[in-house]
Image (cartoon, rainbow, N blue to C red; front, side, top):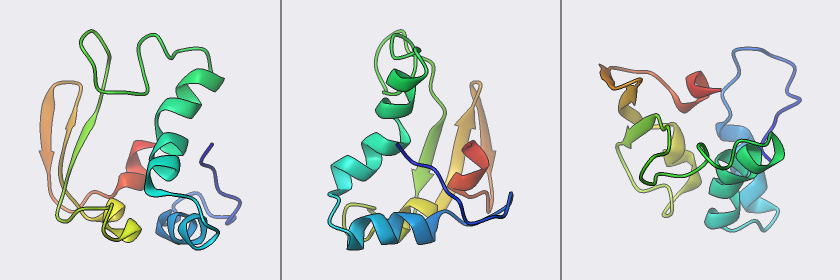
Length: 96
């Protein structure tokens, strides 16, 4: 499950994604650590943790494919939160 002990509330999680990849975790495993695994751990996998009919979800539109380079997870062009589009320089770390 994703988490950080970098010691800063407003830290950039890109470092941890990169370290997870360097440690040998696959892109799918890193993505699960951000989505489905926390939902399972906190008992809300019936409504969170994946994009599926009936599930609640915030959506991030990325500039590049994070499967090609994990740091692309932080390259957010726009997000949809609670059904409203948010454009600009928001980063994935603001979802936490």
